Length: 175
Image 1 (cartoon, rainbow, N blue to C red):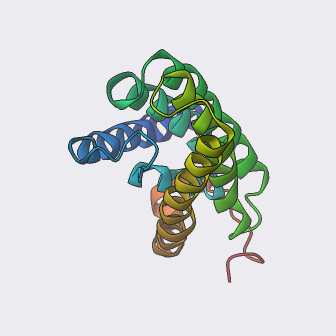
Image 2: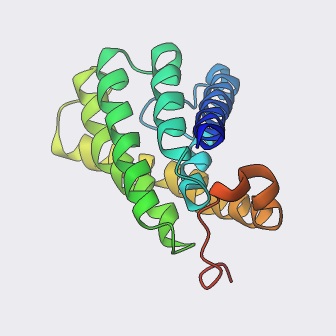
């Protein structure tokens, strides 16, 4: 029992660290926040497909990233909330290889435009909300659906080595 707790905490911490580092790496290119963004770290939001430790891992990683690379206090709170919704929903869809990639797209597409409006980064109009929702969705599709699917495919053969016996994996949905 104690070893399972240590493994869970270690996995969550590693995922959080990788998320934060990946976000920091793209920050100089101004892709971590804003109306047009491509956070490659969002690809990690598919990891609940393999382990429940990914849920707190991506939430904590997003929180840390938003402190340093986000759009202020609104992003720290609401951006982390968007990732929390996505992580929990992805975990609930863990038996569906493709569907697990969609909650981050939907959650961020809906919430991030509000964050950018609250921070004054985009005008508070319906048109700017819709445009920002569209651009955020494109970035999330590229990060979560495209890169996330590649990540799932790359990790499937080594899932038990990386995630151990905690790997939540349904062999009927992997194909």
